Length: 120
Image 1 (cartoon, rainbow, N blue to C red):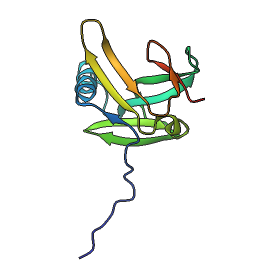
Image 2 (cartoon, helix red, strand yellow):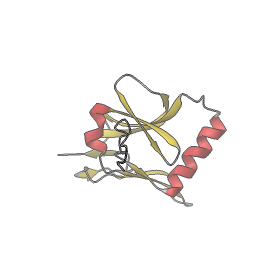
Image 3 (spheres, rainbow, N blue to C red):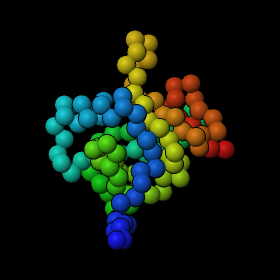
Image 4 (spheres, rainbow, N blue to C red):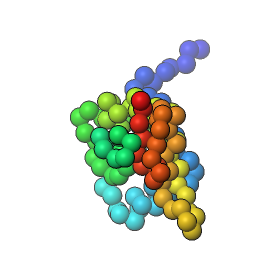
């Protein structure tokens, strides 16, 4: 018996920790986002190290790939994927550190705040 493979489902190039998933789902619930919105993850030029991360809620755009990670719809612009491949997004609840943390194996250097990086 042959197993049918769904070629329309791409593996998500990033990972979200349990803490990040819980925080994203809570934010989606609190903001009462429409069903066509998901978590946008990407990069943009700028920041102290050259590139900054984009993290927010948005609708899918024409140049996006769409993924689902633990029930969270994720939109990533195809051109950004090479900078994000293998990245882990975590969320910290500490007294001194609270917020999303980006652990990116493609970053050759990062800034002190952890929101910008360089690949050179």
